[in-house]
Image (cartoon, rainbow, N blue to C red; front, top):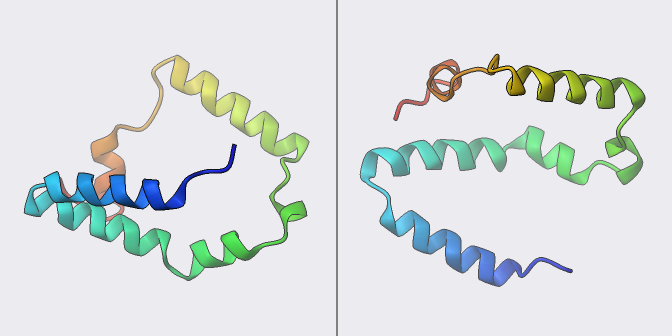
Length: 86
């Protein structure tokens, strides 16, 4: 099923309207990162370069196992690392 981009944008705008000024600032920073040059490069990469290699599948399996064991990185720590504060 193809995503309904128009509906997704409408829902995203509704959610943005509900955010406090501080949280809106955080979301804006994230959106700027997503819309930045690296993201654009990834989005425009040929499909074959996005295929999962056996090494990538193994790394994802290890990461999921780590999260299951509670060894993930706290949200707050990630936000600090990227200079974003809630």
